[in-house]
Image (cartoon, rainbow, N blue to C red; front, side, top):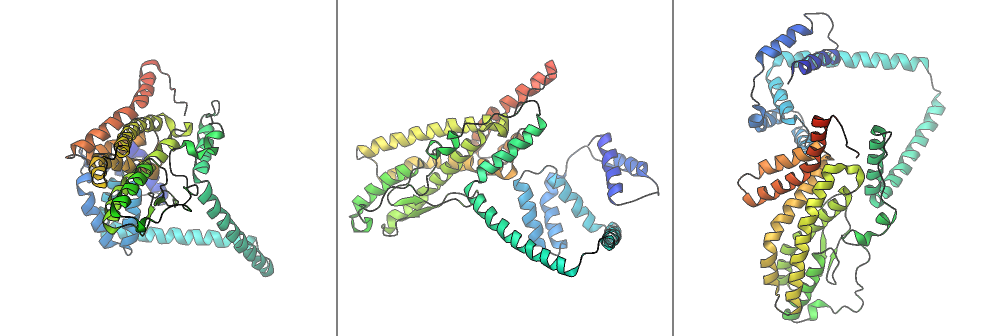
Length: 404
């Protein structure tokens, strides 16, 4: 932390606590500069600090839930803040002062609110009517929001992001894809819910011999693994941004069904990665996310080649369910890592440097797993290319060119 940052933070803290007079900010600034350490030790003790705060808190479940939420969003300096809070729980004098200060500020806010309401008196009948209207409006907004969020969450997010970026770049608006990109969902490569194959003429799979069941399920799986519903395996609608779930025909033989459920996570990961690639390829998500999506698309092409080879074996009658499970296992790990990265970037709403920071953390966390670390390094290198091109142009030529 620089000297200027310390000055700013100390003055901001004194302003928030409404501290006036006394020894002044300079005393605290000198004290902090003398006692700060050149090494970051909070990463080591973050877990113990989290446990200490949870024990001190009246609602430990809420605290841990909020911590996990902020951690998933890759919030900066989170562990440092948790470490500081754990130290505050041990300092009774500081805690007493903060509680007293919070009480005084609450009283001041209450007095200010009461003084403002005395100037504007509202008749009881009017307030009653307005409350009823407010309740009706709330219900209407709730239903409209539920319907719109289920139908167009992605388009709404893109519009908000585009408007936000256009405000920053007033002279250079962000381009927009043509309408047909969004009106033709078959171009995405993900499952089309509600347009599955007709099951009117489908033979009940439970009435078939075991060998025939296996043959038909292998064919279904090859479809499902590339984002197309099968006859006996269908994708369920997504709720929010959760992973894709599937429905398997209940009449399927139990031994076959058990192996099918082991393979289906590959299709769920493929669905998550495909949706991520299509979403982050839009202009408003920035060049770093574009590069990351392009690197993931390259890996997905390799995955499609594998599925094509498996389909060739299936048409020759050489692909059993056990062989499919054997051939798909190495790819399962790769897609699982890609889906995890996609989910983390989505949760954290990461763009630019925050995406690179997340990739760096993921690479560091996979220490000991050479395959996962190599994959994360490949994605980090690909995503960092546009970032360092912008940085290099700024350093050597003084030009900042970041259009998105």
